[in-house]
Amino acid sequence: MSKVSYYTEEGLKKLRAELNHLKDIERPKASQAIAEARDKGDLSENAEYDAAKEAQGLLEMQISKLEETLSNARVINEAELDTSKVLVLSTVELKNKANGAKMTYTLVAQSEADLKTGKISVDSPIGKGLLGKEVGDTAQITVPNGTIEFEILKISRN
Image (cartoon, rainbow, N blue to C red; front, side):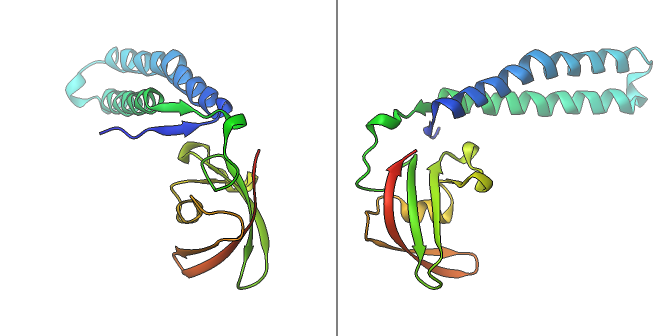
């Protein structure tokens, strides 16, 4: 069962670039490493050959996962996003009710998440807790060290 993931145009380009890099550069390197190891003699006692074959298997698995992700990827038209409630690609301004701290997050797909730039995954506890909420709502979100209450102050697009 495959799961549809939503991406920005930029996020989808990064995934495609990564897949192309793996196929066009890393795959030939892995094949070359196997060929070089094979040339070194007896394969039954050739640890370098075994390591190269294992690395190739891991690479092929990574390529396969990326291909599946791309086949289930959908691009979101940010101009058509509803800003009345929190959705994927919504930028949300929150206030922590316990300490009054304000923060802003943009909800993105798992592969685009980057906390340093304020992008959190819709699959994270906070992301899941915010989805569907409206301005003025309070979201009670269970995180590893307890429950946090956030008040939704503002919802916008990037």
